Image (cartoon, rainbow, N blue to C red; front, side):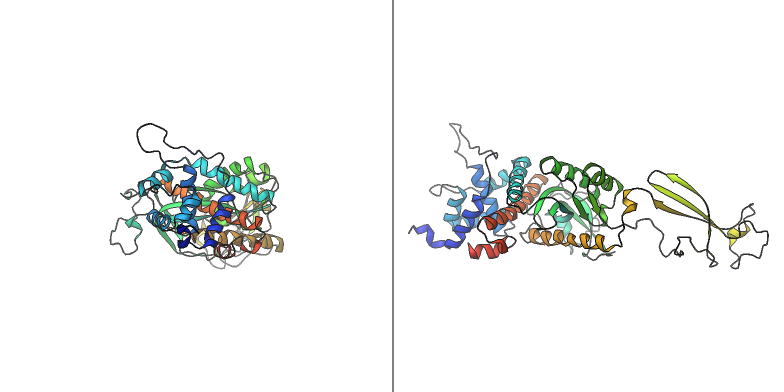
Length: 420
């Protein structure tokens, strides 16, 4: 037995061997320094695998990865490093994760998704879209800070000039009204709603809303993984007419998104037929409608609008004595006439499909468990690449478990490490 085998359990070596075997790095550049002067450099493939180890071991800092590989030389050898030489320094890891183009990381993730498609675990029939917040590595996110201007969006953090000010709900409750500000980023994730495995993702700054990124993400995914006739499941943050139209018209699919009651008047009393009730308790009468783009604006008038009796209004509403020919109150109710308005969100069918959105919440929890919810690096490029490595890690786990016929371990790093 080699002396380096004494420091690392064999099961862990087998675990990383199986994980690395699932990676297709054929398109990932493996450049090293070939100049006469200067060091030889390190394999980019080895550095990529090292960051896979960082996420699998749930390290938040690059220094933790560096120390782990130094103490587990056989894991470093499995990554592809020459352990007879000095292992990479902190600055080597940092330059790699910052300067490597994100498209290479995305290509590896796409190859993992395609492998799961060929294995029959992903087909894109039901997809769920959600975003999760990532706090930047800055003291402005410290809840104990006494800086009164820490959430002034015009004063950027000195430690991370790329991050932006965002807002998030304090919990995942359906009607949560408590919000909190934070400096950082967002990771928008498209998940297979049946298996709970990621399909595509994109990292943005925290000031980008969910609705802004939905169509570009779906378009990009559709270019390499057909989403024809897909069912898109998302929360009310994606209740935007353009998203409905894109899914319905371009993808020939259906949306399962609850209505966002933004700007709507609450506690408005109406009859079953839809006529509003005035302040005096009478049903108002229809008085024409306007056909506008995407919706119909219905006008309602006071039932005594043509009366000449000044005492006809029981509540003596001020608008009844307006001196006009047609007196009394006027109210408008707008109803949609497009695909968004045609969805019956009270049906059992809608609710049963929408319940699959919990797969997004479960996946976000597993992804954040890799220590991705708080950035340790301080620039957009590094955060973006590390986020994608986290997704690749969980996809590689699913592929390795499927090929090992250990389906029950597809979503558990811990269980697969034990069984490997």
